[in-house]
Amino acid sequence: MTSLLRYQTALLLRSQRWLAPFLLYAVFVGVGVNAGEPVLGSLGYTVAALVPVSAWAVRICLGQEPPAARAVIAAAAGRTRAHLAAILTGSAATLLVGAVAVLAVTALSEHRAVAPLPAALEGLLAAAVCVLTGTAVGALTTRPLIPSRGWSLTTLLLGSLLALVTTGSPAKAAISPLVTAAHTATLTYPWPALAGALAASAAAVGVACRATAWWE
Image 1 (cartoon, rainbow, N blue to C red):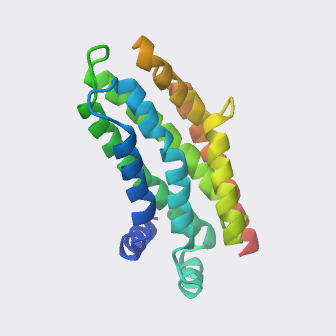
Image 2 (tube, rainbow, N blue to C red; image 1 turned 90 degrees about the vertical axis):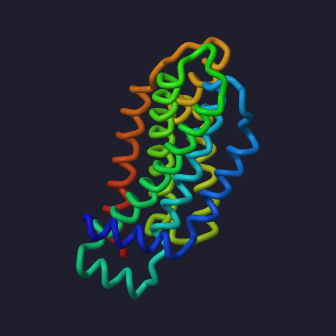
Image 3 (tube, helix red, strand yellow; image 1 turned 180 degrees about the vertical axis):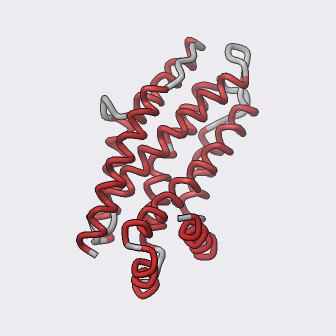
């Protein structure tokens, strides 16, 4: 699996397809977060965008190989393992970018109500929840479950939106306390939301990998 992850990471970096989602995310955070604002509210804004970015990154990793190369890797390592490695690469890349954004926003925001370290921990946990939720969306909205590019992108955007606004979604459960805490300065670490996001992403990735073994 380590070799597959290195291969997928090298493909992602060389393809430069990561530039679109991650640069747009940087612009989104740069425009929407101002220095000196309450830290928790700024973190809520920062982590929310990780849902569509994570889904987009996973979709990129699952579609970046030429068909011939994908067939060779599948024959050598197995379709399920190759598919899983692509998903993990997109998810890990987004988690790294999200962690950097959380730490930067924490450093630039106002901390009179909440100390930087607890705020950063809250933000990092919420970022993990949003990345895992986006990973689930990305895994379910691209090949082999939705091979059409148009329908794949449409369902990805719709799924990301629903993940952010639907009651019971782990992402919404992690973001809402941050937005509320911007006024109350009360920290509520999203451990239940993290557990729910882990379960949802594991189930979604399992379905996607099993479908790859069946249909491709």
